Amino acid sequence: MHLSRRLIYVGILCLIAVAFWWINRPAPVEVNLHTVTSGSVESTIANTRTGTIMACRRSHIAPIISGRVEQLHVKKGDQVEAGQALLSLWSDDLAAQLRLTHSQANAAKAKADEVCVIAELAQRDAERIKTLQRKGLSSEESYDQAQNNAIAREASCRAANASVEVAKAQRQVAEAALQRSSLNAPFDGIIAEVHAELGEVLAPLSTENAMGGSIDIIEKGCLYISAPIDEIDAPAIQPGMQAKITLDAFPDQTFSGTVRRIAPYILDLEKQARTVEVEVEFSDPKIEQQMLPGYSTDVEVVLKRRTDTLWIPNTALLRGNNVWLYVEGKLEKRQLEIGLSNWQTSEVISGLSEGEQVILPSGNIELEDGMSVQPTAKAD
Image (cartoon, rainbow, N blue to C red; front, side, top):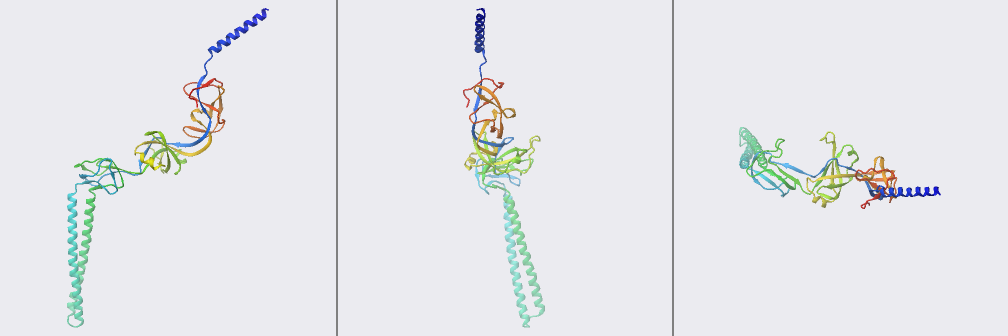
């Protein structure tokens, strides 16, 4: 009888202990889950520093002689064609010099015509005297004098024609000098900047005066992306590879592109981060028309792509390619074999099956094997 009461008391105490533990037990930790599915996974290489959209051709041009701006034909934003005049320097002296050389060339030509006509007449006279000599109507001495005169006149004709060529060359020099006073567009483009004002005296561009008196012209309709890639990754990239392009100016969009060139040299702007310049062009010309030179960009070059393969977010991966698996409210650590990977996702070769759920660790919560967890409302 006493034993039965003791057993009852012990049972009641156990029930009370269990109830107390149940009431005060720790609540399951909330975790974010990702359901393993099949999809596409890419192995990519990204630029190490921000890339930039560049114009295929962009030039800072200026007159190659000094002078005062007489006419300014363009302003920022104007579209120009190759050969179009952009600005003109004061050139009255050069124009006068050109007119002088024209006159000199005309005078030299007239003089040459005169001398050559005289030479022709002298040659005819020599031939006439030779005919008379054959008939015995003229002396040999008269023929010699006429022949020598014809030879001298012919030499004067050649000298006069040479003077004409010299005058033509001087005229071409004067024309070139006058052309140097006009700055023309080297290609079709858009005027980005004009560093000149009417009446301002300009000096030719130099290393000390890189922006003095220049006009910045950008080729229209041709853009590419210059992206620095770490020297270690560069050998894996080849022209023709596909690339994904993102821009701060279009934060919710990703554009497709193609690698067009890999620079054959290393940039060592930063001694600890040597890079190779990779050029990428937009695949869609219509997209290219929306872009502006100077936009900052990020580029991911696609090295390999696999479709219909299992993948998980990289945030789920732990050291040693382990993951936390969600199994009936408990945690279970599992090691995986990983294939292709990029900044966001990794291919799962083995260790998981489609439909299983892995934990996406967040915050400073320490997870342990066998820990009770529950999915958050936003679990996928």
